Image (cartoon, rainbow, N blue to C red; front, side, top):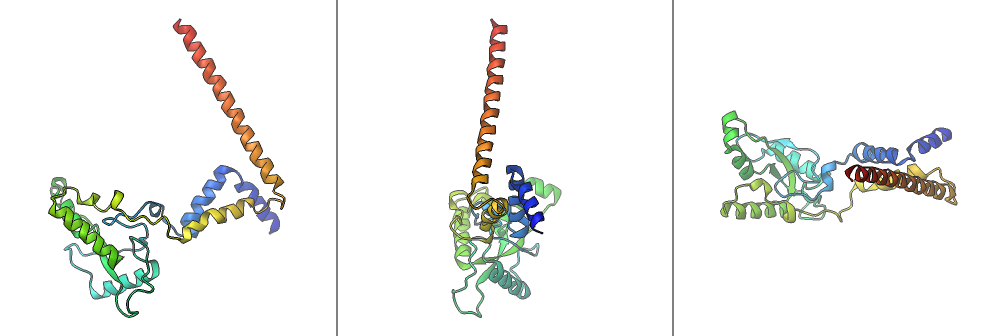
Length: 229
């Protein structure tokens, strides 16, 4: 087993294999979404969204059974926009999460009014995601203000500068870098000489490739200049 571990470490020590290992670790082991890297829009599927419940096509609110499932998802995965699980908010037995239509009802109605959707009879499909009260209130305020102003693209409301920035919220996917570092340098000797030598070799190789490219580019430029003259 120890020999197998050493072989694996040698295989993944190269930068390409390290990148592949990081991607696989982030996606499969920690079950994180690539979309969760960007800030959360208040009017789209949030960065913390994991599981959604299909919503009815008539824009109705969630049924009692759906609300119970939304509450369970919220307590397990948190608000799909900001990630909070509302652990210390309100009474334990009271609902803490709303069933958020994604896309929101006003956005879906605006999409359905597009001429090409009417011509093809294609309706916007929606899902319910758990959302905390604060994010729900912010979403409602943003959309209400935009509708009052006659905004023609409600789908863009709640994103950009208005989106929720979650960079300081710790999540399990953040452990990817540390785990990859342990796997890729775990077999290095305690003094770190092997790691230092490998780094120097990579820098030296990069310098040599850069110099070769520069010489090749210089030769091409000189050749073109001679032909031009």
